[in-house]
Picture 1 (cartoon, protein in one colour):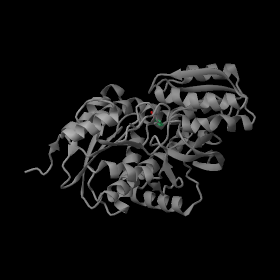
Picture 2 (cartoon, protein in one colour; picture 1 turned 180 degrees about the vertical axis):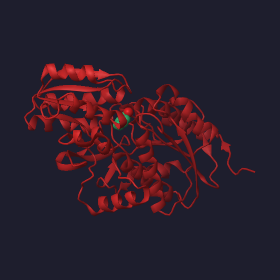
Picture 3 (cartoon, helix red, strand yellow; picture 1 turned 135 degrees about the vertical axis):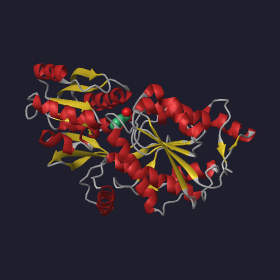
Picture 4 (cartoon, protein in one colour; picture 1 turned 60 degrees about the vertical axis):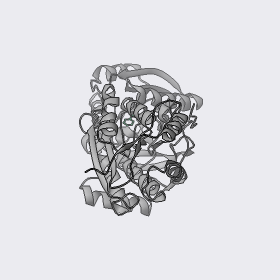
Length: 395
Ligand code: BEZ
């Protein structure tokens, strides 16, 4: 006989309606037996590697804290979201309605995140975002049960524009994938670059997840800007870096990006990546005991080097263990759970950070350059950067 059941109470419905603005009954899970934790991540497609790194990081953090949540054992569930926005709601409901998870950890792609956000707001299930930077999740559609441990899409690029102008590049072309993450990364870049005196001479885009860059690289060569700035990630980023060099642009037109461009892809990109400058809330080379200890432990456990996605997963695991410990495993004690998570200081490999009011990390942005398959820190591009949280009302 199962010890798990759904309990729909009138008071829970009222709490939920107040918190999300919707008059829908909220799900309250019985708090005995195992905590049910669901991963909704891409395990196939251009972001597959990112999903694996996030899951590794989450599991590693929880294992380091004894492998339990607030004293309770864990039962794991997994859904491959394929980075497919049209299946976002359906996939999130596989975890929430079918598997009856207590917490959903996902995802990578901003468009898919919007599906999770809807399900999280409607059900009240705890939602931890280990990557997707879509602003609405901690902006207009923020919710008390949604916490992000990564970034908003404009955070890295808000730190990029001034760094490029400071390095003498006043005319830039922007290129990205044509979806919300690219558009929001561009918004951050535009704000910081134009404010610092730069001019964006052309915006270019390819549909997600296309890697047909050739025509646009030919166009860049003919425009001859001072520099190129971009948002790409995962397998597509490695291909973009290689194609950029193959098109003869490397060494002629400096390539910049939000740091996802060079995360987890340096083996695949090879020497074509050398010299690329990016802004990011993490760097392999952060010279702190915390980062070194994390990197050694991760490499020894997973036989691969960690990247920013592994760090974000790790921090998600830390946040969850801290929240669960504060309520002794009773994740239904939502007020105390959310308060603990809001007040937590995450002792991350990226440096210690806390949540903003809208539940997004307040964090430093590092300026990095690729050298010999490593993202080396060359400065701090922005200190304690918070997202705007525009339109967020927690209720
Ligand atoms: C996003 O879709 O939000 C995203 C995907 C990969 C890296 C960074 C952001």
